Length: 503
Image (cartoon, rainbow, N blue to C red; front, side, top):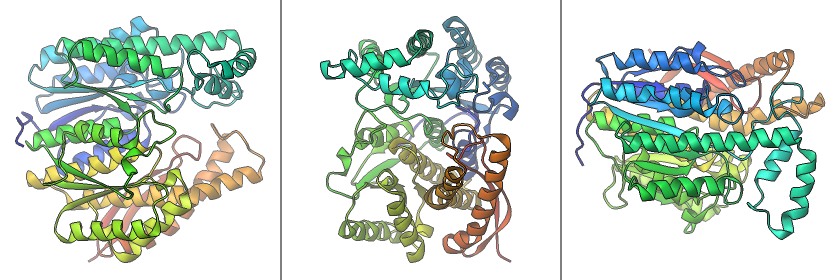
């Protein structure tokens, strides 16, 4: 399907926070497609518990609005309103301040009536961010764990949960519980204002991602209230409420790139098991098929299992050996036929060992080198959104003859090095070192501990990186690489790498 093209190639992108997956991967998508993706200065994005500078972000967005080369705006409401994802889960900016900052979007629409403006926000997750007891956060360890347990009960608690609810209320200081509930209420009010901005035409596209929450908990009434507004105002064609958070920026940047190419990707979906579509991630409130179908639309695509441009393969936990054989054979056949193949491996939800074995099978057989996209990290939605966005960026770049094969190879290499090597092997070793030192709370590591672990992480990943690249892209070598732990914890790593063809 041919879409109206974006007038110009540039995209102004405000990320959710400064983590690599939220701030760097969307920019890398632009490089794959040959589309410029501009972001605010790193200093304004904050870092972990240090809030981003929302007012500076607003000024940057106002400046980007005046850039005639920018044809699309993809903006994190959490960054613009509060200072990022972590800040959105904590008291701080009152509703009036958050709303005032979001009014910059109306100014952008007034100045750029023909631009495509897409915003992504979150429905607050059940657990506050895990913070150390002495970190100055409103709910330090172990209080945040009590809040998490309380928020995961039914609302109101079932009779069988009454005693647990009462015990937790005794464990949580009343002021802390009030602050938590007020923060939830503020965030829902901000999400409702974003719906108002969609109604009045300020926003072309809005997605509200339910951050880490299953089918039961305090979030249920929030989601239902927002869904009711969407239905009552007939916003279904422009607003989505679905699982996920970290992948939303990537998905909307991919959408903007596809629009620039005047292309609506047709996406087929193949699950590794017959009942794969029904699989339920405990950190998401809908089955995997809902996340997959929602992310196809969010990336600008349409589901088409018969005549696809991209075939998305989704590997489900507890896939049997025979099913894996058929799965790999089908991927190989599609790649051989010249189809774009994207793989979202969700088996880490069952076992990192299972994911590791499958990644090594793909690498050893040469299948990995033929994939257009690969992802295997965090939640269903995070994984699927990453894989889809990479494949869409590559397809769009090919259609506009601005495709950058080296940028594409780099993106895939980083995903294997991160999702496979780091999460399946290195991260467990780092956590083992912490356990050996008796460090139980790993939410924020002491500076000396973080520095030691970061150096260890760098050495281990560097040692594996050249071997991995030789398997994935034997005609290339590593020209430069930087590796660190960006948030002084072992949950994620940052990998900045340059690869180059062998002479």
